[in-house]
Length: 446
Image 1 (cartoon, helix red, strand yellow):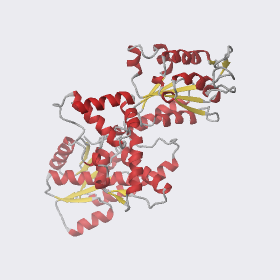
Image 2 (cartoon, helix red, strand yellow):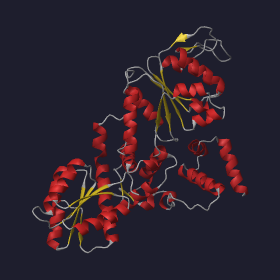
Image 3 (cartoon, one colour):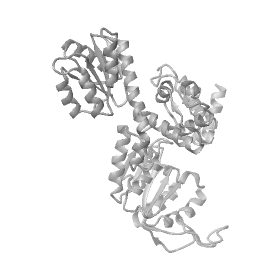
Image 4 (cartoon, rainbow, N blue to C red):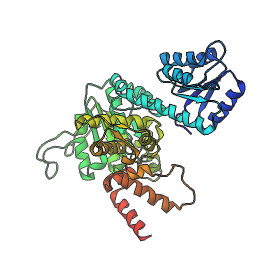
């Protein structure tokens, strides 16, 4: 089914033609509206966001050409196709001149119809991509890019969360942009003039995490040659972002709970507590509630952190956003490397959209950066993409493979997507490097 269920308006004065087109297009997953004439079509356009208008050429009172011209002058985000039983070269030229994307002569096959519709909708996506730079420049998204419904819901959550002092838990796979969401909440909040302090809890050794978060006094432990404030004191008045919160120990979770409850921290080596005014935003790529059930995460801390929960969608669930982001990254790296801007062919765009993106936006950015470096021309074709993207099987896979086979294939796909980097692959898979090594050894012995 097409992503975001593309909306098509069919305009024809013949009821049987309307019904055939409606039935055929609906079978392909499109949301289809119909109108027996231009006047009715205009009313639909005023009420609905239509992606593609398919109109007959000759109709009573007002012709399809007039509708084509009206759409082109008033709806820049709508494509137009013309169909006619009175095919002529002059008519085709006139239709294209007024802005029709395609011109189909009756009778046409279902394959010709579906091909023309897909081509017109792809042109719409390409035009939206070309406008992306202007749209982004005019918007205040704090680095979160996209027009899909899934990402628009994130913007709505961010706006609501920013206006409250409540703690926020951001969930989602690695590489989806959880830190960008945290930053957006901070910079849209009343705390915008105070610091935003990101902390990756998984990258700090357990023995140092308390000192890093809460600070320490001189002489508190070996190597503490001076008194140093922690991240919570640095973020005073602002926001602290605790990424990979699931990697903290139960002992550290108790101390974090105390900060949430009492708004106080105790530096290592100090008996006194100090007041801090800090908003906490946490993030995880794991199922915290499942960890709570296993006794690996405190339930009281979980409920304190998840007053507001924002689930960031996978890139594969964001429809045409992947194409917009690909062009955005291409423009970005072309500027950085002082190269001519590159664009993607229709075949490359299809391959990018069909790929499952296990590493999400971070993986896409890495792939596009490599393409900008390696591509000599100004057009990226499907053949320029990594082989995994060109030849990846459809997402709906067969159901006769064992669980071990599915796991092995997914691990190999993730490894190839990150160039064999086991640390990055483990992060995407949500496991540690040791577990990844063990699984790879198991695959070798099978």
